[in-house]
Image 1: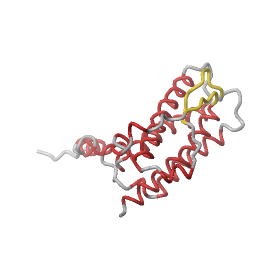
Image 2: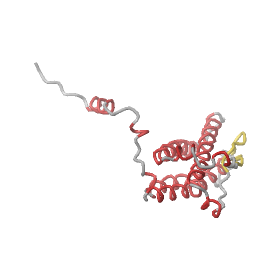
Image 3: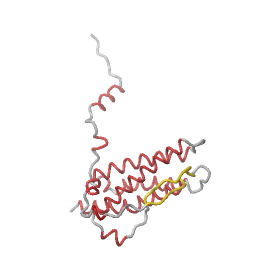
Image 4: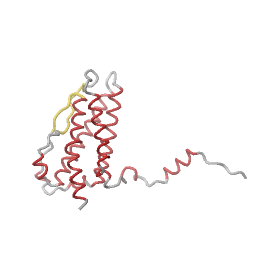
Length: 193
């Protein structure tokens, strides 16, 4: 009886099947978002998308307005907020951005001539928002957002509308640089105590 070699792809398949289900998504290291290089990567992608759409007029219009979070931050009020309130605002903003980019992606797919560079950046934004959601969940943002001390008193999320991908990517970039970065810095700092 001869010995048969197992093809490399079969080993890969077997090793993937042996991983516990859900680990790649749910098993993100809890403090990974606290590494500034991780958030910086998402910031660079968002800024790159914003830059690509700066000179774009024809292909970057949305056929309908999409609702996105208002990214203005009152730093005095933000610093006085409990971490749970900050988490709620970030979590709601991230959810709204995720809905908005998925809507934008659908509008782009349904357009007569989708512009490939724009499609690439929209797809990256979809992936980036999913990853950020996972990283924030691992940090505990979802739990904090669901139980801030004054949940009943929390103000509704302020929103604006975007009529172009340029405006969407500007909001996306500003959200990451503003509220998300402020929240993660505070959550990571208080988590280190």
